[in-house]
Length: 615
Ligand SMILES: [Zn+2]
Ligand SMILES: [Zn+2]
Image (cartoon, rainbow, N blue to C red; front, side):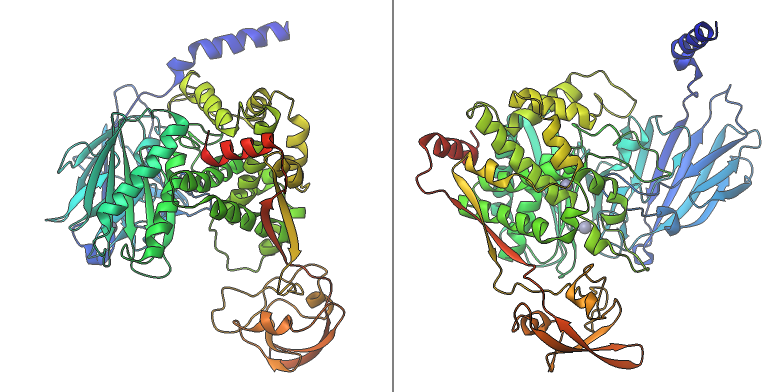
């Protein structure tokens, strides 16, 4: 009986679920920036509540983070001067936690909330308003109405005079108003407001692409060539995926004319790329293109083909997904591959790029401590999170970008080998996109299709490879076993050469990158010679073997010695100077190179050509 009544209850709940969802609100946002020098965006949220909604209050919340940047940003910290009113009277409101403003309706059906947001950070995560431009993504500016993220929203942007507004959903010149099916889509749309950005356009297979450039420095006349090169990337990637479903896509580039800015962020119909340096510089030019190759791939992988946890979101807590090694790592792999296939790197450069990633992962002590899945779950701690406390993350955390890139490399080669070149990882991506995005019924209000689980993804890989890959995933994705580079590379007639680096010793010394002056030690390698010598985090390293050392030369000086040598080191700790003895252990830095196997079989060479040429 209990069982039956429970079943009955479940049926009733499922059947009547749509009736229980809250009545939709009409939510209109307006964004102004009348005083750019103040760095204050001015936001108005107008909420109309339908008759029949009996709630006593409305909660307005700032998200803790926003899509694509997984560290917690706590955007509420930049909000100031909040107030709320109805047409006739001011409304009472209270902060009920660090991200929530609770406004009492006092019987009103129309509520207008206003607040300002400080933003002076051109980062793709936070917003910036200054005398040169306004730039924002969305989640750092707009509060959502708790319980009503699913409702359609409207946005009006009021720029300062002579400034123009553009984003990936701009359909006509001088557009100031947008409508979005839900809040999640509104905040996934980076927007540039300013007097001096440019926009170029090209069409490919019936789709329109915009290239918006805001340069804070000299372009050296290179913009037309740059736009043509962006088009080469679009050609290479749409060749892999097929015709995209969007009608238009916008690349927003910022050349920040400094030496520290840098970000690329994927969005549904656009990407925003913030590049240090200027377009006239060759290095900045190609770095921006290479980021574009990564970000445009995300238009499919992560924005549409997505892990089940990535949308719709609960903005009160950070994301928890085990699949960022696919979402980011595979995109990292394909970004490099597409940059190569578009003609910007030859095969040698492509292979040495991969070998460099192998070196980074295999030289890291964390590669034996953190799996690809665990790295993904740690994203809120490692995706540009900043700390005031000391952590051991430099030794314990691994990049899901790089580990994922290497998992993709190995899977791509294994699938090509096992299917004799008939299938590849490209087929996995296309098949997954088709099954979970194109053909799945919508699982939520957020977006078409449904998100995949790791088990879903593993099934697709197994189907394409023609063999059960469960054991492979267990070892290399969930556990920390070294990837089977030799086996995978041999299938295409290549091999990995591991050699002791020319300066192979670190002795476990890690420099604290936060201290920009002194040679201060960070978290030392566990069980390392430095730790055994009695050095510790926070010490300032003064000399090695009697030679004074700096942030620039300590590694070179240390590498004058060899395994087994005992050398005097001097450190300063608090107000003391300590003389210690360090005994050098075995080399801990290796170089990796991918080279050809002499006399590789014709089959292997043919598979290699197919891989490198994208066939
Ligand atoms: Zn700008
Ligand atoms: Zn990415």
